[in-house]
Length: 254
Image (tube, rainbow, N blue to C red; front, side):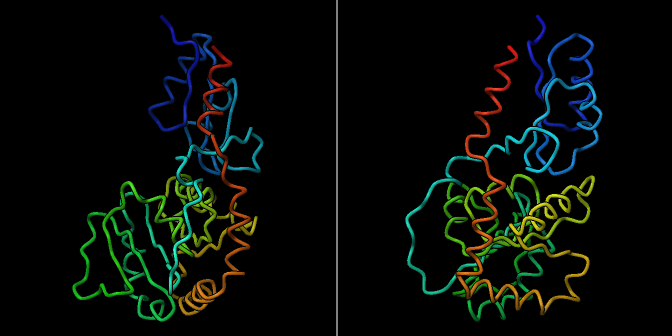
């Protein structure tokens, strides 16, 4: 029995299945999470029945990226004496972000607490953690709540991370991974920067602009009004119930 519809989000594994769907006359639906299409989706786009996208501003139908409901949840406000900077490099951490955060923690600690989600393979320098700087390898069930608690987030620019931060309305600084396939993280970050929805720092030139960047970060941490602008604009990149909307599109083809 043939499937009634084939749904693909890209990746090299999806390519033969998409081609087979076309040969067998089965509707093929694509979803591209990033701002630019990966190679498999670019090939399959020529034969797809429908194409959906996770970023606004493309030629395809914008349905957003699926995000857990708790990122959209309004958590009770917590009283804090100091703002909180959250630095997270994705599920595996990011060595560059880890080293940058530890290096610049003394300046940042003057005005804010720091929580660094380092990834499980990061070797924490001895004597670094103090009352204003915490380093944890990973956050599990309480990750969404931690994101909501943060005043500013520094993150890589993967589609999933951006969608979660947009859902939580976070003032965000993006540092795209230079080695990302198809340079998709830089394209993601550029889309937010053009909409004034996030600040983008380029990793390659970050040392030349280091003090300028630190000053900009400290200004954000000290000024709620500046953060508010980014918190409102980043919501353009969040779609509530994206998973349900994608499921409805699939059901239409059955």
